[in-house]
Image: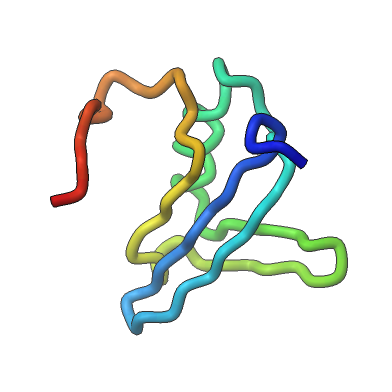
Length: 84
């Protein structure tokens, strides 16, 4: 599967644990950012690997990194940033 057809997500927790997922693109570029924002408003993020179902309380999440980032982002996103 090429990068154009998949996204990666890394979820970090306050205790230092990290979960990494790879999955097929599930939203158009126009709706991806909106779907991410909607998911973060829910009490849990649910991810299915086909064999396992992860139910992750959003309150337990320290940060989420989605790669590649959707091209269309909300106005509140700071653009052009680099890790220093």
